Image (cartoon, rainbow, N blue to C red; front, side):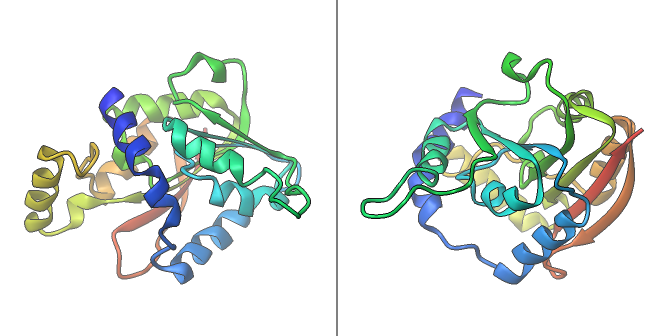
Length: 213
């Protein structure tokens, strides 16, 4: 955990400056997510990064708690809510950013209508435990909405390259998960999958919506 936190803290400012690589695919993900959200929903986003997704979805829900293990990422997200010199403060009032992980005690006692996990589950060392925690955080019939880079579907050369990058400290922990593996793990954690997709279609970024059963 400490190693991953240090990695994301270190790259946070550079990460924040990089534009979304495929805006069309990102918008498709947001549009599909919005289909499952209502203005009455209380939502948790895990691995929120610098908060862009939470802020874009804020008008569609009652409240979003957005968390990330990186303190620097959360500082950048918080700054997006702060007033800029000569301008009024951001009017988004239903987003709360906090540093934290799924295992943090400060999430205990809260339940949510939906948990968002975008580009997150392949970064988790114990994914079954993480999915179990997400299930426990959801209200009855609550939704897990995720998008996961399934590196296990890529050529073996990708595996070699990423392992080399990890060895020299320029890549975080990554799991080479496959489509069938993540589907099975989500199902085994007490969910029924209601939608899947790839956005972009040519990628290995698997979008999944699953309902707690």
